[in-house]
Amino acid sequence: MKRQLRTLARNIYFGEGPRWHTGRLWFSDFFAHRVCSIDLAGDLRTELELDGRPSGLGWMPDGSLLVVRMELRQVWRRWPDGRFALHADLADYSAFLCNDMVVDAHGRAYVGNFGFDLDAELHSRGADAVFADHHQTCLALVQPDGRASDAAPGERFSFPNGMVITPDGKTLIVAETLAGRLTALDISATGALSNRREWAITPGTIPDGICLDAEGAVWAANPLEPQCTRFAPGGRVLEVVETGELNCFACMLGGPEGRHLFMLVAQTSDAEEAAKSPRGQVLVTEVDVGRAGWP
Image (tube, rainbow, N blue to C red; front, side, top):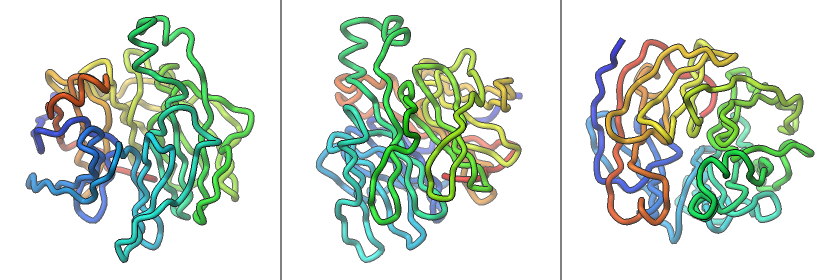
């Protein structure tokens, strides 16, 4: 069926890391250097301004907001009383820019990173060469007290991007964008990841941001096409939502019943081009199955 889309916001630069929290969709606007939120009526507000690009977002059990600061390769924490300070330094567990993040029920954060200068490689070698041959990287695990480590020692990932955690807290699924797949790992009592396995190959989709629904399916944004696709475990395509003229880079389920699918769209992810003018948008539609797990 064709879903009815609504444009919730225009004039953002490049939206990433959408999270439904306290009745609003929160997201990072990379090149405006701000964290924003918006409600279903379209009331857009700036929640936090930074010196540099924010990316992944999440909340700890005490209500503290965690924000990935891409260029610094750090996670910062805004406490409920408004203090904003360094939470974790990921310089030893990232290469180039840090990116997406998921925070679990205990306040543990999993953070991905580019692994290399993606834009420079695309410009110099071209997309086909980069997809075929690129540096892999690790996932970082940040404990609630800010201690950082390699989340899955010995494992390396192809541009680890969007992540979700299943409702039982036992499985993390990560989008390996440049491998065109979703990968699952078991979560131990300490937060460490193991038992890596293929959750799905995503034909026709290069998975970027992802979210999980109550039937165990994953919605994946496709940064190379104006699409957001719902996948069953194993990779069967359950539904495709078309996003018009703009490609889809991130998605999140939210709303009063968790059935509003928010999609952050833009013309390009190229940093130089995307930073020139605010041409990104937030789209929303209603779907049949609500959200589950984290975020």
